[in-house]
Length: 166
Image 1 (cartoon, rainbow, N blue to C red):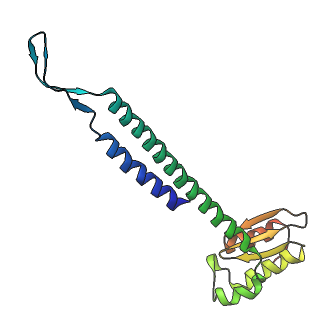
Image 2 (cartoon, helix red, strand yellow; image 1 turned 60 degrees about the vertical axis):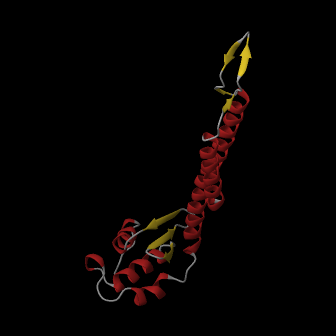
Image 3 (cartoon, rainbow, N blue to C red; image 1 turned 30 degrees about the horizontal axis):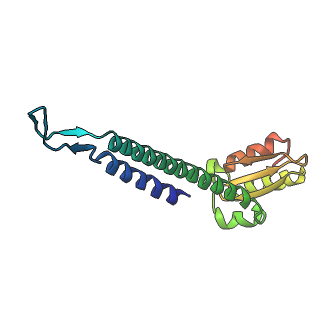
């Protein structure tokens, strides 16, 4: 939809430039009126002016339609990326991924064992813990879903829910 919008907008702009450059002037012929010679002159033709106006209006409608399609295409692409990110939460348990992803000490002195203990204590409290990329999804037994973005926040979430990290 974005590409089609770009093409429509470009065609509309080109059409508008061509329409703007349309000639609306016609030349009258020499004539003799009551013995007076009237030389030829250039006058604006109302029919040609109306035709130019019509072309300009059609080109502007085409350009606006292309811009709208471009904008809506960008919005739909953004929303589909967000849906794709939200649908990747069903990964294997975080415990399986942590030793591979984090070795040694983590942020603010938390090591892998601290994270595993925090996840285990949350699971023991009945909270489902899933890891996706750089965030954790915590699903309470009542069905509410919350996201944790860092390792420190995961440990803080475990402490805030009254679980003990031993």
